[in-house]
Length: 105
Image 1 (tube, rainbow, N blue to C red):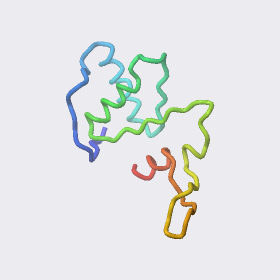
Image 2 (tube, helix red, strand yellow):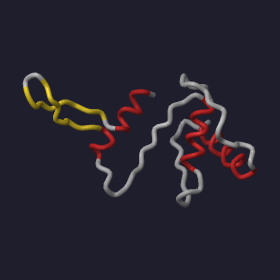
Image 3 (cartoon, rainbow, N blue to C red):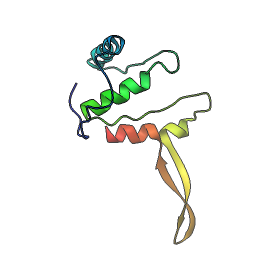
Image 4 (cartoon, rainbow, N blue to C red):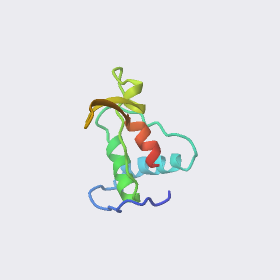
């Protein structure tokens, strides 16, 4: 995968353990395709840790979005929120987490 423009960090995660190594290779292979990747598995098995470590190791910023039945489209894309200004309370657009990630690449 291409190196990102963030600071490379190669400490703090062991990629050579047998299961981790196999999972890293699977994720890297999936990242070669121009399609989204969905990681499934039980809670606590290391999916987020693996992707975060890959991001740090390759110089990419990782944005984690936790989806649940309470997640609203406004949480992802954004909405108009009240802000204080010299003219009093007004509404201004605030990007959601998904829109921020898309804009930042």
